Length: 80
View (cartoon, rainbow, N blue to C red):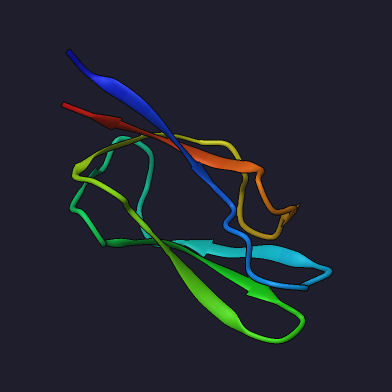
């Protein structure tokens, strides 16, 4: 049975502003474990958000250019 995993903004220290720079995959795309899904940027650095498991990127909730906070759900990954 398929599971849905929320992909959340990780705690990246004392960053005050976090922005979704861009998505590397589209909704409905099959992804592999550790595949870079999107890039997040803070006032100090940029870093990738990787898939925790193999699955399908079911829904993107935060679009490119949106500001987000630690703990916000960026997307939903559906796993087999």
